[in-house]
Length: 250
Image (tube, rainbow, N blue to C red):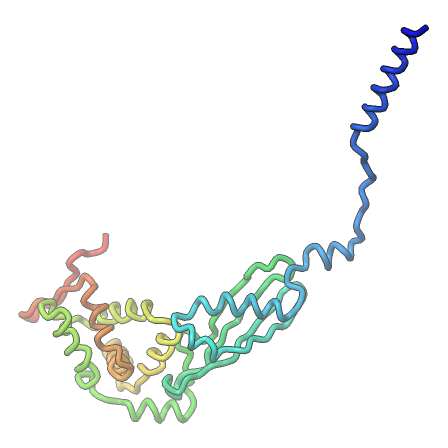
């Protein structure tokens, strides 16, 4: 009898221990759909958050961080699940009357915080060529090619005199200018493009290059443009036989 009681006691103790160690589970509670929509996935809930994100990603695009303050404040509008954020339009006087205002446009997904688009409107030298002030300005700045080129050609003679790059053909010089523009900040490029506008009898590369050479001179970029040209693969012969690339592209 005593042995039976001992066996029953061990069994009961084992059952108690088993139930004590078993995990306590509860039935899953399903959240209402409106809670999921507005709490779980609304990462950018208000315009302040959207504007903060837009400011952060836009600031990184400008080399001159102090210049960025001119674009503040930013303002956001919500359309469905997309925040569209605009900066303050900026048009420095140094760009001349031919340049349109420059501003950031940032699109942010409200649910994920993903940057869907980041654009600088008119950053490619948007120009007000049809307004009278711009037309008058281009006429006043019309000058001969040799006058426009003097500063850059002088800089070429200082940076790489043995290359004779002042003899570059118009298409070669234009290629150098295009590479130079890629090295400029957003604001510098907009200013360079606007300042290069001119009135020419013939709308050809010589005319276009003349405007760029004048812009480089007037914006104190002549030496920088010369250094970019000297870093190219072009080499011109002093006997006037033309220019060629030392390392032609494959």
